[in-house]
Length: 212
Image 1 (cartoon, rainbow, N blue to C red):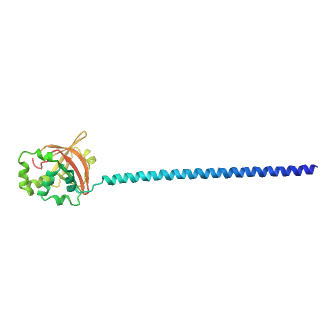
Image 2 (tube, helix red, strand yellow):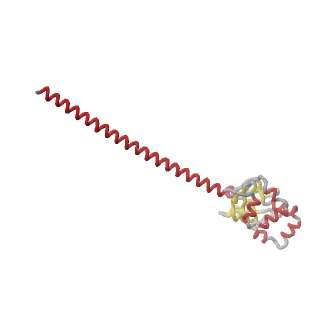
Image 3 (cartoon, rainbow, N blue to C red):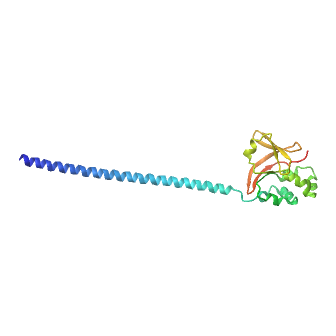
C-alpha cells in the first residue's frame, strides 16, 4: 500500500509540475507576445514620429524654397512696381546688364517717391547726360558683395565703399538704420533684405548724393 500511495503521489506531483510548466510556458508565451506587440507599437509610433518630423522638415524646405529669389536685381525691381524711375535711370545709364551680372551686389534702391523729392528739374538734367552724373549717382547706390540687414545693424559709424568709389556712412539709431552720403544727408532704410538671385535690395526713402 505504501508503495502504491508513493507511486500515486509521485504521479500526482509529476502531473502538477507538468501543469505548472504548461502554465509557466503559456505565461511566458503571453508575456512574449505582449512584449512583441508593445515593441511593434513603439516601433510604429517611432516610425510615425519620424515621418512627421520628415514631413515637417520637407514643409520647412518647401517654404524656404518658396521664399527664395526668382529674379535678378533688375527683374526684382521691375516686378516690385515701386522702382519705375530707378529702372528707367538704369536703362538710360546702360547699367542694367551690369546689375544682371553674377554679382553679388547690395543695392540701396530709392523708390519713385524718393526721386520725386529731388529738386524740380534735377532728374531731367541727369537723364539728359545718362552716362555722366546719373551713372555716378546710380553706382553710388551699389555696394559690392551681399550685405544683409543683420550685418548693417552692428556697423554704426562705419564707412562703406560703393561701386562708384565714394563712401557712405552707416547710421544706426535704435532700430532705425540710415546712410549718410557725401553731402552729409542721411536717408532712411525703410525695407530690408529683398532677396534676388545676384544679391540683395534694401529700400531707401531718398536719393544719395556722391558729392558734397
